[in-house]
Amino acid sequence: MRTGKKALVVGLTGAIGAGKTTVAGLLREKGIPIIDADALGRELIESSRPFQAELAAAFGPSILTPDGAVDRQALARAAFASKEAAARLNALIHPPLWDRIKGEIAAQKGADIIVIDAALIVEWNRALPVDVVVVVDAPEGVRKARSRRKYDENDFDARQARQVDAAGKRAEADIIVDNAGSREELRDKVDLLYRTLVEKARGENLRVEPLII
Image (tube, rainbow, N blue to C red; front, side):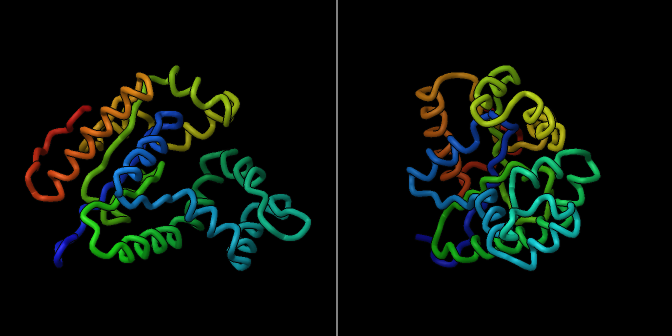
């Protein structure tokens, strides 16, 4: 446990299908608290009636279910229809989401390392107090294959087009986890990632250049 020392805040990201959620789960198994930005975003959308009304005003009543809740699939279709629509959604959801994430960070008393699992860490730039950016990466063909159970190809392409591309994410990374291989290989790489983060939290590993795992 820390004694008055600031936790190392890690921003964990990656392109669609790269495996960042899997990496987050493996880090959670090691006792690192994970702040799931997607889950907090869903909670914001599903629990706040005033916010749901704002979304309906911005994207039309077709994004609402008959009982007035937000149909998240309908909202996604509307938001990913164009860059302008995506920007409109981001302008609405990001400020309150950042506040929730900062609240979660503050609630982790005594933690040495805190991980924010968020697809848009790079895009958010300095909106959050992130010390280390970890990018999980894999070739596009591998990522598409992994994503088939969740997205069709058009949906994959539309979502990817609204994010910084894989090369852009890698350019902003302090640590890159290459997840082109098997789950067993990834587990070994996460072991190394964990040891590296522990060293950084102790101030023992202060290399500036990107580390590729």
